Length: 363
Image 1: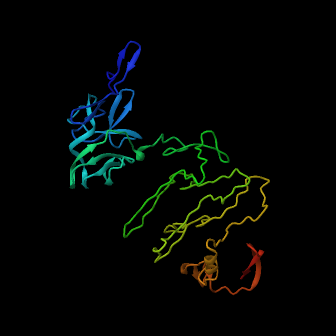
Image 2: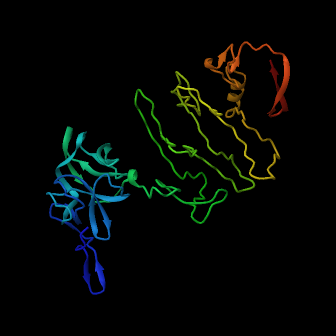
Image 3: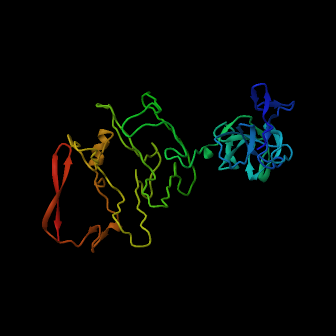
């Protein structure tokens, strides 16, 4: 990187951060080119010790301007790049864009936002003319820094929040670095999505973790810790719901509030594997049960009239075994077991009834 961007006056060191605006309303900053720049092509404009410098659109940079050079610029050269105002025929991937739509950065590539400019996220320009599969767009660059959330990535060596981190604490208590919001009914992260596709499977959030070494892992870990002796509300490690519209909405196939699938490979799978593990963990030698401590609790709640209707419904059951579970030879539900000798029982608790035992039989 060229160091002549520094200018020294007395004991002070000056770095050029100035912007200029011409009579056409275009906004410019003076940059050092990170590489040979192509006219009418968009680049990130970031800041370092040399002032404004360009970077490829794929470069990790959480906050940046988007700049378009008016002419070709040599690698390492100092020149002006446009970050605001009208640009004719800006080079893009093949896009079909409506007038007023925002252009944004999607994983390092210029893309049509599919909606009018709102200043959100990675939107950096407004299209001024409609286009159909065109590789150039007439746009107005917005002279503001954008947040490239897809490249807001810290060191890959960071073990706590290498992609996204906010706040800190230990296993059982918050710390001075914990983000605090003591407002009632606060939602710390709130994401609302809408998918109107007629086919396919939409997902509000998709998370996949590959374990390519010898370590174990979890694709998702949710942990709620209560440090108050008398919490006024229910405490859940996770609460997942499946809802339906008030007057419309139904399921023609299968609907579940939570679905847990073990992908059994096309081979014999060794070890002990379960689709669901309900676990009670003893944190110390004094761990004990002072009330009712259950692996699974069944609840029918809501409207009192609705509760009665559901409870009395012949189709409302505690367990539902799918047809694949049923077989006369060692099925999960074995229809050919004829043993009648009671081998033991499983303890259960029924509210309003108390402790009871379910018998099971040996062959």
